[in-house]
Length: 299
Image (cartoon, rainbow, N blue to C red; front, side, top):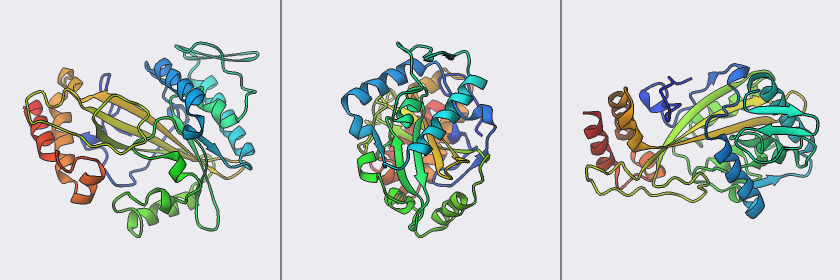
């Protein structure tokens, strides 16, 4: 996976270790599956709010996914017990999570919703069918400019309809083969990045980044890194897709020892995007201004 830097930037795929709009999958160890961090309590509090106020917006499940949902809950509970006992304490009747008020009962249903209440990751179930893999269930609290209501039940091609270079291309074909050939027990991961104009975690609407070209142009922007994992569930054969969002202020780059390297890496990747890609990232009108701000930061 990517090189690690000091907090707040836990993952920096724009340093050259990953390339945008590529599959870029790499094998992971089981201990790398989940990533509880210092923001665990804040993320779970936001999930709790969304489940209470906007459940249909952030949770959907086909009626015959109960067995797969239970597989996900069992898998996540086992991983947390084995590798994250400092943040998750299991006891009779439930789980106590650091930074979160109240215990989580493992008997609560739907099981996928219970699993989501334990971790910062969003959880998506992809199920094979005649038209390919479709989105059969999801707890999606922190989407990056896409809506669960719009994508629920759609196949991979439908989900990625607006992603440049995915459908009818080598990338889409590679992902389809990957899904077909992914074996139970395999765990793989990838990254992507975007720039956002605010600190919101729940971001289903498309974003447009505005810059004024000033020396403090980065002060109001955030770099949003998605760490995604894929694995096949051994019982049902569905694929679990997890998404962990890292959302950090771009201005915090200035405090890092490797600030120049990261700012220049992000600038180069930004300038290498084609017109469709830069438009997809909401940077069509401000790519040059952002690149100039990163250049000043790198210098």
